[in-house]
Image 1 (tube, rainbow, N blue to C red):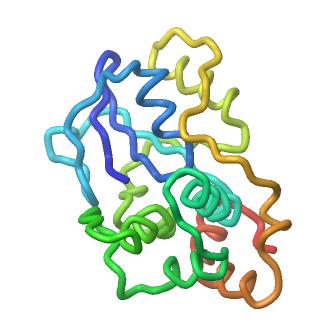
Image 2 (cartoon, rainbow, N blue to C red):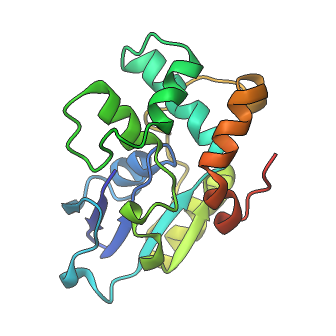
Length: 186
């Protein structure tokens, strides 16, 4: 996605697709944001509290597949979706001029330099979303009440969708996410 300058309270959100970022912008900050930056954090944002939400890499992949299948018109198999994800010749930077580029943009590694995670002061876990949102609200001084999830897709556990050679391919592709974000690799 992009990095966003949030307002009142002022901070920067590194928005990784399928980690709750749209929910945060719409419901916690109630749309108070500006200054989208693709693949960078702007110099004028230096010194602002910067955070990101991360998610188990395979759960995030299945969520993206389900989202594209249920809401964005993708009619291929999960293997077809993975083929696009794994194809490093497809642009991921945000030009999004084709469906394949949009898919790739949604599924690159969370630790890819495009997201600028090295700029984050704190990482929050999607798996404990409500508690992590409450923790973020305390950290930033926002009043918190339970908020609805935006763009939620219906899907089971990643283990129900990813097996065999596909599991091996995706684990290799997301190896750095597993290692650096502290998720156990299958």
